[in-house]
Image (tube, rainbow, N blue to C red; front, side):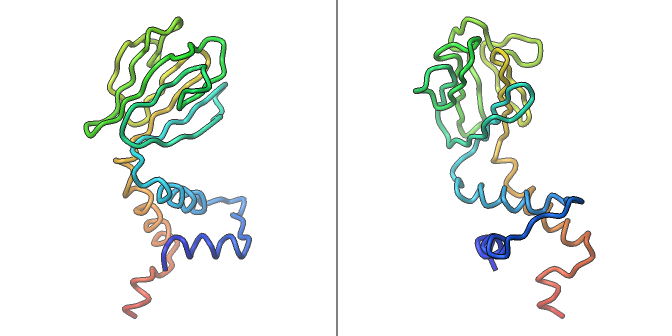
Length: 164
């Protein structure tokens, strides 16, 4: 039984996660989302006032961030330049570069011109934040967490049931 079948069963039965949420359903949705974009290596969360406004994933290549609607990451904000920064993903990782914006790009309190991003880095553009996630290092962690969650619940895994 694959992920598609599990997600179809969850949708068909209209299952809702209990208030004492284990996070298992969210992890299944994350797997489903990842399978739709298997060639994507970068996930960017766009935050405003600490809340996630948008989540985007991208394959290898160049992504422009700015106030102009023609950008791949469009941020409507008066402190964001029309073409504020670029994010370049390659086989070695991901780099963010300021495109001579008016208000700059910040990593924490430090203004940066060019920076190699690490998973979890939070970059500020005006009042907006971009949170970088490297999907290449994330590939097996959700599957492992799902397996651990099922094992921790004391239920037999499918493999254990088949050998019994």
